[in-house]
Image (tube, rainbow, N blue to C red; front, side):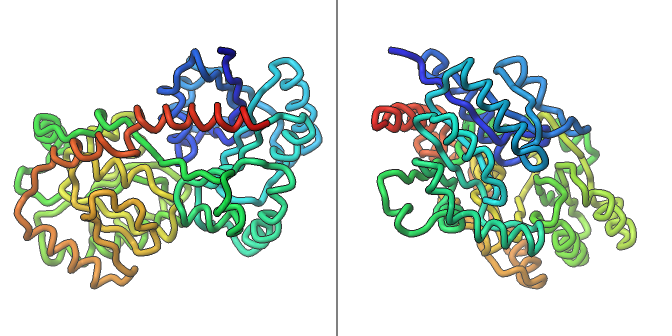
Amino acid sequence: MKKIKVLEVGLTYKLGGIENFLISYFKKIDKNKVEADFINVFEKTKEESFYDEMTSNFNVYNLPNYRFHPIKFIKEIKKLNEKENYDIFHYNMNSACYLVPLVAAKICKIKVIIAHSHNSSNDKGALKSFLHFVNKRFIPLFANTYFACSEIAGEWFFNKKIRNSKDYYIINNAINIEKFKYDEKIRLYLRNKLGIANDTFVIGHVGRFKPQKNHLFLIDVFNEYLKKNKKSVLLLIGEGPLEQQVKEKVKNLGLSDNVIFLGHCSNVNEFYNAMDIFLLPSLYEGLPFVGVEALTNGLNCIFSNTITKEIDILKNIKFIDLKLNEWVNAIVEVEKKSKNDRKSSYYKLLKSNYNIDKASKELEDIYKDRLSRF
C-alpha cells in the first residue's frame, strides 16, 4: 500500500500542547504507512529544547511566518507540495485567528484538509477573540475534516452541524503510558536530590508561565496552605514570559525556601513521582496533556472547573471554582487521605484511549479513511 503523505502545521520551538501532540503521535505512528513532514514558522528561542529531536527524526521546513508574510507562506507551501505531493494537510490550531495555512492547502488542492482545535479559549486580548469568532465561520470553506482534542475545544471552534457530522473526530491527547508509571525509587532519589524530606508534602504543577496557567493564583493558594502545613513544598516545572513575575511574587511573600522552580526539564515524567498532589488552576484548557500524565502517575489532582470533565478518566479528579479558600481546603482534604496505590492508575490507563499505542493506530485509520473518501 502507498504511504500516506501528511504535512503537519503548528509546530513551534516552544514545547506546548500542540508540540506534545505531534511528538506523542508521530513517534508511534507506523512510518511505513504514514510519512509526516512538519512546518515551523517561528524563530528560534531559548526554549528550543525538544526541537533537535524533531529535526533528527522528521523533515521540518522553516517557512515565512503566515501571520506577517501570508503570500510568501502560500507560495512556499505550493512549491513544497509540488515537490512532495501531500495527501493530507493537518493544521493544528490554538485559535482561528489565522486561516492562511488552510487557504494555502485549498489552493494546492490537497485532498484532505484538517482543521484541528487544541484549545477552548485564548488570553490574547479582545482583537484576537474577535478574529477567532469571525474566522471560525470560514473554516468549512477550506477544511473538509475537523478534529478536536475535547468536546469543549470542538465547541469553541466548530458549529453544531460540523460536530454532528461524520467529518468530525475527537482525537485524544494520548501519552506514552509506560513513561509515566509511578516509581518509588525515582521518588526517593529526586526528593533527596532536591533536599525534600520524606515527610514533606509536595504540591506539583507543570505548565508554561503564561496567563492561561494562572500561576499567580497558584502562589496565593500555596501561601495560604503553607500556613496550615509548614512541611510543604511547591514544585513548579516550566518556562515562559511570566516566570520572573511569579518569582518576584514568591520572593515578596517570603516563600523562596518552599517554592522550587525547576525550569524546563527533559525528564518531567520522573518529577511526577516526587509529588504528592497535582494542581491545575488554568483559566481554560483544550484537554491538558499534563493532566493525563499526572493521572497516569497516580497523583491526586485538583483542577479548575473551567477544564473539561472529559479528562476525569478515572473519576477521581476534584474540579473546583477559582476561589482561594476552596483550593486550600481541597488540598488539606487530600493531605489527610490515606495513601492510594499509585501504580493502579497506570494499569487502568493502559486500556484507555489515552494510551498512545492505541491512539496512534486510530489516527492512522482515520487518515486512511478520510483519504479514501476524496
